[in-house]
Length: 80
Image 1 (spheres, helix red, strand yellow):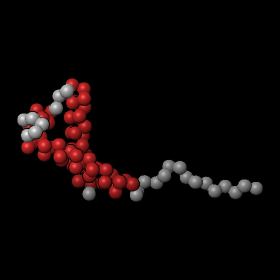
Image 2 (cartoon, rainbow, N blue to C red; image 1 turned 180 degrees about the vertical axis):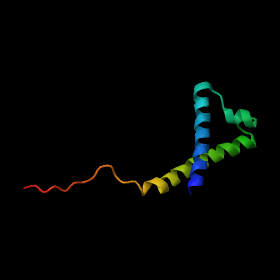
Image 3 (cartoon, rainbow, N blue to C red; image 1 turned 90 degrees about the vertical axis):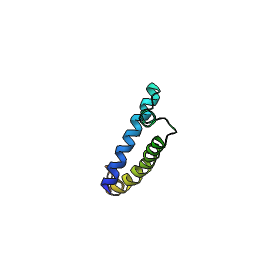
């Protein structure tokens, strides 16, 4: 499960960098590399990045959600 998580996380980072370039410079690196936004290659990459986002969300919850303990402990002090 960790391998899938890291592969997905890598694709999510690629997508984040691409969106950063689009937002800052109006430059779509994926579209440039694969021949336009509507090209089959770019659509595959966009789809993989989107699926990877869902996968990272699911695997993060599975990997870290259940094993994480609250940093705040509850104390039950007796009041006299």
